[in-house]
Amino acid sequence: MFPRLRRTLSAVLVVLACLLVPCGALAGWAAYGLADTGRYVAAMAPLADDPDVREAVADTLGTGFAGSAGLLDEATAGPVNGTVRLFVQDAARSFTRTEAFHEGWDTANRTVHGAVLRALRDDGAAGRAVTVDLAPVTERVRERLTEDNVPFARRIPVRHTAVTVLPAHEADRLRKGYHVLDVAAFWLPLAAVVFAVAGIAVAACRRRAVTAAGIGTALGGALLALAVMVGRRLTLAELPGAVDGPAAGAVYDALTETLRTASWLLVALGLTVALTSWLTGRHGHRLHRRRTPAPAPADPAPPRPTRTRL
Image: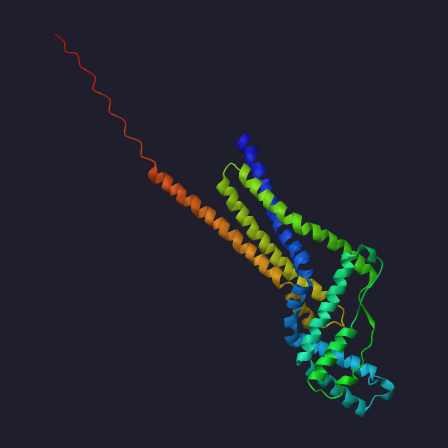
């Protein structure tokens, strides 16, 4: 009865540990990856060279410039305005290939991420939308274009306008989730390690428990990788029509690259532990069979003496 109880308790602890592994990896990625401004900007920086992202930014900039100049007014639309609109679009695409765009891209991501992070960490900001002032970004781009001797760069207006990044209700919802992830990022991995060690310690056969823990860790990593893939499809499917799908997909891939790497590392680690434990146990069993001497054959029974009759 006692060995059966140990096997049951060990199985429960190992299963709990394996379930907490992908959850802990997800919480750690959200709390220490997405919540770090430097890592976020570094992850987003290569997207400045992504064709889909540059095309989406060029369309947004071109539409904004054309709208501010009144080129999209249907009452005055004509061949001249159409030609100017194409010129503005081409100029916006050319701008996305400059060093000024790269600097503006990094500055804008740093500004927006810092504003969102401060709002999520500030409990007193409940009920308020998250807004940023992109005037410093515009000013930095203007300085860079002026250094590159771009004509009329100094005439680019720098307007201090509050741009809403997150509405109040979404900011409040994300703030609660951020606090939960901040706590879970520390306790979930620690609990997974404690459960795994306890499950192996109480197991009747520790080698089998280690093998099971390795297989469970690999399955958890594979499940996490599958969740990232499903999350990408669901995220892109729920985007509004005004958002460029390929550009959003590139952003999603850049943000989840660390999470995908962690999931495959868990798969590799789990399989390595399980295979090592299995091979070690098999090799030890063979050595034990070789070192165990074979039982000596039993001595034949001595012949019974025969009585002679006189």
